[in-house]
Image (tube, rainbow, N blue to C red; front, side, top):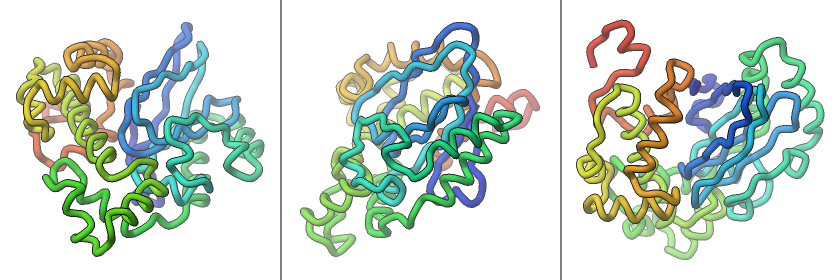
Amino acid sequence: MDRVPVPALAAVASSVWIQQVGDQPLAQRYVPHGGAEIRCVLGEAPRLLGPLTAATYRDIPAGGTVVGVRLRPGVLGGLAGPPADELADQDVPGAELWRDPDRLTHLLGEAPTPEVALDRLQAFVARTVGEPDPLVAEAVRNLMPWRGGGPAVLPDLLSISERQLRRRCRAAVGTGPKELQRILRFHGFTARVQVAVDRGAPGDLAGWAVEAGYHDQAHLTRECRRLTGVPPGEFLAQYRSACAGGDDHDHAASYLPMLRGRWPFRTRAEGARGLAS
């Protein structure tokens, strides 16, 4: 289940989570969202999944418990050491990035509950992460789907050359501004899918495509295939199958930041209480 990060991480993390796997191994799918993720199967060493440009799968052992932190776009450059573009699409052991990762592995593995382990991981990230590049942070804000702008306006808006902007964006985010905009737009569409699954609503791919900033459903289909390997209808069906199983699959904390009040909805918990949208 996704959760809101502790206040100390609010500026650098969009969500945190605990995931507990049953008696069968799980191939967990990760979809590009512009940021990076720090995750740890309790008892194993923590790892960093760099910014993705296409969907990938990572195995979680049967009976495993995972705690994780999803970093906002542009934050990775202040956490990992190497430039973010060197970590794009990479799954890197913590030992290659941080000092004394064995101590963190022990702290998480010896936590009495997954909740305590997640608190310890958040405290580690809060201590470790540096200040994000403020210019890149402003670029990210202007590339969010609800802003309606695009990479072409950023050099004038930020008083920087296109070449310098691309260099700084790649170092902090892992991709250039144009690729980041495409990923954030798809992340906005993914948030709309999550809302539909949370409400048990029927799919409306054509409408969602326009709401997310695509020209039409065909445009969405091309981008969905490029970023996930499957067309939107199959992506939606897979998501319903994986995440419609109950409160332990509530992803409101991760999709809320991408909605910005554009679509009326209620979370699964609100629906159970009968609150209005």
